[in-house]
Image 1 (cartoon, rainbow, N blue to C red):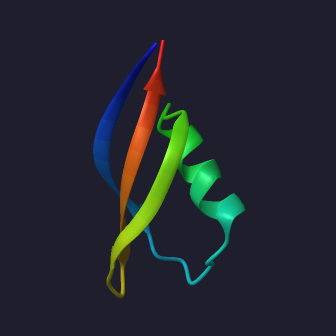
Image 2: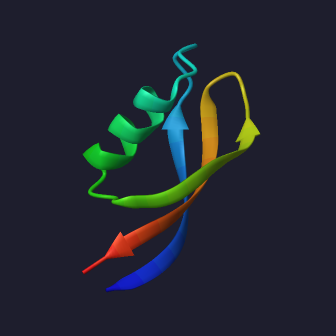
Length: 54
């Protein structure tokens, strides 16, 4: 297994929950080991992710 650091943008729908972020990451085929919101705008969340790859 390998961990790859990535920065992704997720649409800001006004929903701010762990489930929302993890579902959006899963849709992008990202298996998050950990993640953090690093920037917020009116339209996007910028998220730093440690992606656990096989």
